[in-house]
Every structure is written in C-alpha cells, then in structure tokens.
Length: 432
Image (cartoon, rainbow, N blue to C red; front, side):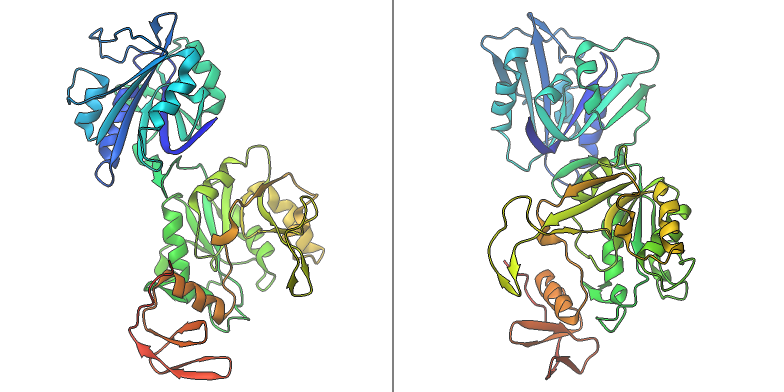
C-alpha cells in the first residue's frame, strides 16, 4: 500500500453523491492557507470509465496505454477538474488508469507532486492501492445500490457521510490538515492532567512559561486543533481558570493520576478520551489521532517504546528484538470510560498505578515510532533544555556550561551551585 498522509481521498457509493462538490468546497477552505493540489482519479474497466469525470458533458475520452495523466489549465464550471481550479487549487491533475495498472498510474501521479504537498483527491478505487491521511465515502440519500468498487473499500473508510440537498452530514471543518497530514476530527475528547505536586520541579509545572504562555496553555492550544471537548483534571483551588476549560477535581485528592482518571472520565461527554499530562508540551497530533483510531474493541490504547541496554549507567548497545526493556506512556494514552470501574477497584484496594489496569481490561499497545518528541518536564534542567530548543524564553536567560534557565523574574537564576545574573529579553535561537 502506498502511503500518502498529505492526501485526503473522497470516494462515493455511486454517481451524483457530491464528490466533486465536496472536494471543491474543501479546496476553497484550505487554499486560503496553503497551496492545494486537486486530483481526480478515474478507473477504467473494459473500456468503461468508473467515473467519466465530466459533469454531464460526456467529456471522457479513451486513451492509449495503461494510464494517462492530464493537467487541467482552464478553470471552468463545466468539468470536474476545471471546477477544482475555480475553487482555488494551485494545480489539478487527472489520472485515468486501467484497473490492472492503477498502482503504476498512482505511483507516476505522486511522482509529479512534492512529498508533503497538500492534496485533495476524488476517486473511490484508488483506496485499493493508496493509504491516504483520511478516506471519506459519500453516500446519496435513499436506498440506491452501492457500486462494487465502493463496497470493496468501505471497510477502510474513516467516515461515511450522507449527501442530501447539496449538503453532507460531515462538516468541512472536521476535515483537518495538521502537521502535513489529513485527518478527520475524532469522536473523542481530551483530558489534561494537572493535579501533580511538581515536587522535583519545586514550582507548578503547569504554569511554566513557554513562548509567552503557561505550559498547560501550550498543551491545550495544540489539542484544540484536533478535539472540540477539552477538560482539565486539577485541584479546584488552582489558578487555571484563565484556560476557559472545565476543571474536574479528584474525588480523593493526593492519590495520583489513576484517581484523576477515575474521577474525570465520567464527567467527559465523549465515551473515548485522550489523556495527557500537562508536562508533555510537545504533542505529535498525527500520532495522537492514530491512537484514537486504534481504540476499536479495546478499553485502553497504550503507547510504548522499547529501550536500549544499559549496564549501570553505561550504554551497552541496542538490544536484540524482544529483549529490550519496555516503557509505557500511560499519561499519553486513550481511555474508554469502561476503565473506570476497574480503576476504582484498584484504588479501593490501595493501588495507585495506572499499569495495574493491565490484565484487567482490553488493551491495545501501540509503539511510538519516534520517541524524540515525547518527554516529561520534571526538573529545571529539563525545562531549560526544552525552552532553549523552542527558542522561546520570554523574561530572559542565564547560562552555565550546556544548560540554560529561563529567569522566573528579573534578577538571578541558579543552576546547581552557580548563581548568574539574568540577561533581560534574550531570545535563544532554536537548535538546527
């Protein structure tokens, strides 16, 4: 399967279900912010086109060879590809391919497009050879039979939407383009845990400044790109009202994150919720979306990574597969409300570890492909390193050795035994 995460594919159960209209409206929405490539894919069986590609004009033409790629140059309301140009696409390509040569045709088509170009494509059978960032199937109102080519790819659909009166029961704003990937807004909420004591940090981690915002606001702002329901698990006496989000207190304070999850999940609107800590300020939203999509048939989607081999503090090389120590990220995971009864039983028995849920519920373990982005901020040194990488000190910086600290206030800042004068309003450039 060819992966193209920067492409959204729009299929249809038959003719006249609004594929081109939906594609054009989506192009119009996103072309204001970025260059969009429009694509039409027509599959030919026995010299009959799956989709003629012309709006009632009989514009389909036979072609020689296994496939043909055309580039539209004339905006026009009379052709599907012309309508895409009119809607705002920077470029529009039309692939016509015989079914047995569809893969070769798509490979040739994608070879004409930059790797991370934002693409909006229509074509149902293309899903048999390409794995897009999102795949949407449109169906007409009524009991019209679904064509065989659509039935074959129906299990791969991220969503099936109904078309009626030139409108659909899926919103354009739910088709998201985030970090060069297409995704559909998930039917899930997000919960930020901010009730820890920050003992190692010595001050409230949720309020540490990053780019002029408290760290928890940085987390919340990222989550808003994917989720409509976001809440915070925190002490009601906390100073987090500025977020404008619901704040859920623990039923019994001081019992750790398992208590926070057991206390807050029942108050969320969604059955499925992504739970993350406020001290993981860098989110990989495509990976978060993948976690949510992996929740079918399970109670918990638990990310993990396999570590390396150490003898004491000395690195001794990468361990053979299956022998590495495994590390879980339960505070960056997806929970169904069905975990709450077991969580409460664990808490009632004196347990506090989220990992005590394993063996009691259905768990889907998902490997973190690149763990460089996921890190907890627990110490001043870790915070300083992150802030230096992000290049967003606001009050100023002071440096010793390889470490930098953001000044909490104008004056001095301390690292270990070193006390240094704060340099006002210094901006540390991001690392290359």
